[in-house]
Length: 566
Ligand code: ADP
Ligand code: MG
Image 1 (tube, helix red, strand yellow):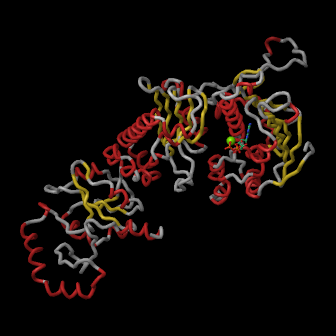
Image 2 (image 1 turned 135 degrees about the vertical axis):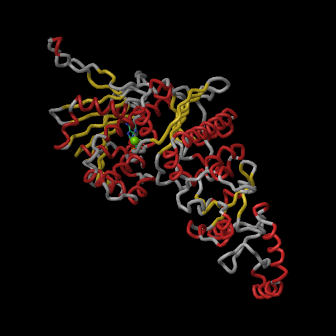
Image 3 (image 1 turned 90 degrees about the horizontal axis):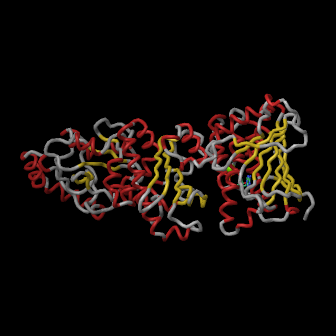
């Protein structure tokens, strides 16, 4: 139908809108970044679709975003000649679809305005930020390739509903018109807009244009009906294609925020141009905090993939292993074909080689960070250490590199923070100590108080205190480090080797003999519940403790499987 239709916002979208309007006024200017970023995404999408159908460019191949303000009318307009939207797209994208992150977002609100405003971007709810500064928003849009009379006019005042009606539009793309709130008229000021665009959108790959400023020196009156000339306000080159030395830290950070939807700064990054057998640019970032959905297995991950500067897809997960899923960034390949699909990526040997190289790149970046900025590394470990611990199981070939990056709590200070590396541990090993010892328990306190540690504490031998859920899993895949075996002190007959004096060895042997009767009685009493009962000289304060057989599943692993119903 061509008639005007009014529809209600989907419930969660409505809640979000209310939030936007009423509480997120501390960082108003971000709305422009969100809208420019949508315009630039729309340009990327058009370029991608035009690979298969060049006619989509119509007669207008120069992709750009334009920002114009009308002070008198109190409006601000952001227009692009990107992919545009059909009526269905408009209804779905700007109104009714329950975007996957929205409910999660609302659940995570803290009431702290600054923190909450930082959450907005993470959930891809950018468009609604228009209502931070506008009390009425109009969208005029025509999908590339669609006839002029199939354009759409969307309008809403950001309350319960929005309307859509047919519209006629010669030019392709999307125009968002903001009717600025009374207290937001500052956003109709040219200088202000220029500085916001510079600040947030400098690295956008297409020009963000504004009308040329009238130069007073010329004196001549311009004819009123003359179309304004535009000029680019941003640098408009893909940041990752620029030489490292020419990109400032601010630019790297602002680009990070653009691609990650994270409002906090990145912790660290690595920007490389690779030439030779493979040719690609990569820009990889470590976030400083985990996203809220990190433990959700279906959460988006992966890099933004470009082929020869052309955007191909978001979340290309084939370029990094799962245990590095926290890495954000861009990879731009010269070897892949422009029409790669996810399916092709899965089988392409070029992708495999790139994955190997990018994995090394990330591990090197982490080693460098650990070495040069240990405090920052600690921030990283706190945020993502548990994910890194999946590494040795997933990535056998890089096991040694990953092992060096692991951090643990140990009996050296009994602190719950995981700050000690295996190299630290080895450097503190006692003379005659051949193995690296660890204990696993369901929490740090239990680990630190384990009766298995008594003999080690007495002899001053350090033990790793493991209590993360993944630790059993990790230790199942880490048998040695630097030629030393990793040994669970709660498992089997522990052999302390040279750490034990001759007398102690004898005592241990005699013990079994002396307490034969007791052992037999306990064995009978416990019956099938235990495999065997042994006397030990290791306990100094506790009368007895349970140990796990040498080849049995760890206690923690068993708990995980029990929880999973196995
Ligand atoms: P996100 O950009 O994270 O997807 P937004 O709320 O910013 O979330 O935008 C919602 C959706 O609306 C986009 O995914 C896109 O499909 C559509 N959209 C928004 N702005 C434009 C635009 N300028 N051109 C085409 N589509 C757009
Ligand atoms: Mg967006």
